[in-house]
Image 1 (cartoon, rainbow, N blue to C red):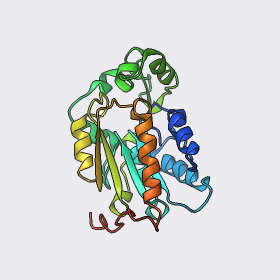
Image 2 (cartoon, rainbow, N blue to C red):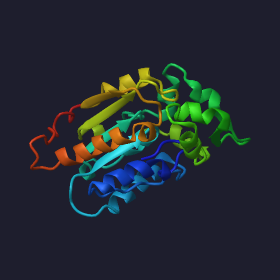
Image 3 (cartoon, rainbow, N blue to C red):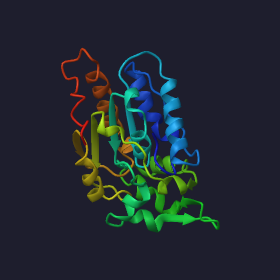
Length: 236
């Protein structure tokens, strides 16, 4: 699931890489006006998947709050890519406010009503995609859209990572979601990876993202020897 200000196009490269390896992929378009509506859009994306193989749900940035709200029985593994990983009752904006500041706050431009924000186009490239070459950086930032702020202040009502295994990818060069906050989230996850990545790891570390999701989809098959222990987080 894509992050705030992004669209499903952010996942074009990763989705193509996974499909080339024979995996079914569904990408949700969020921006539905509320966290609950975004979670519903993500669940509808699950409905579009063909077959009955393992389901790995990956969320980037705000998309982590979305996959957290998915019904646990519908997913086999959660992947948080520099993402929000809220517990019940927590909000994305509240978690950001309780972390060291980043360039995100100074890059946001509000509309007169205060209901949506955009990212300053002069700041967006370095904020999200500092590790891309200028042409790729421009291609990704040109697709950014306004973001409704309401979902960020709406509390999480269910946290699937309590019932399903998860992998958190800490991106140490992130200028949007502070690595300190990411390490706090990583303490909640079953597995942790650390990448020297900017915020947009789906682009700067596209191959690594494809490799990770492909491996987890394979390992989550019930007959695979690396099938995760699904009881690991039931009490947390």
